[in-house]
Image (cartoon, rainbow, N blue to C red; front, side):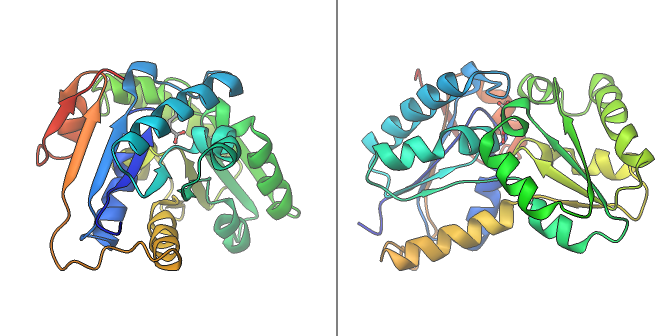
Length: 259
Ligand code: DGL
């Protein structure tokens, strides 16, 4: 059982930022990654649609023998993880915007959150924000259009710079000192964000925390792969293989799969 793969899915290519963290922490683990790019973005879909897509992805990963599933998508986690846990008898790890560390450490008492509409409007997100944001200002910003640009290979482009400038402006004006990246596509924007933000602003995401949590849950369930051999990874996309290959530094093979 422990040599079975970890399944990872995202609405598209962004969850590879989580796969990178998992691979760093758990290099022996075999993994199967699904990029549902055909249906991206999830962030503008209804909760019902996101749940249906998440169930479809989970069923495919289970049919591929996965022992645990990482929902490498904030939008799918905040909208669907409860249903997934109720529906399937397999451990799930989700990802949520890292509001807690930002809220606890801010000195300017203002933090920014960049995420999709689906995440910002979810009950889970509201619950977490209410819990940690008593004495601070939280500037929420929907990253409309960012996922689409990344999915179409325009990570570094004039259009992207234009969107980021507009989205960061109210945050800079409010003197944030933390920017929380609430979407797994966004860690790929860090070099660009650093150029646009004042020096004192720290950018945080939840990738490392997800990898730590995955390790802990594997251990608790006796599922950790103890073989001293580098794990194998299968990357699948239901759209263009080139965009995801490039994000992975053209170091991994990516296969097209109709799902
Ligand atoms: N990577 C997904 C997330 O973390 C993007 C969602 C979308 O497709 O809009 O939310």
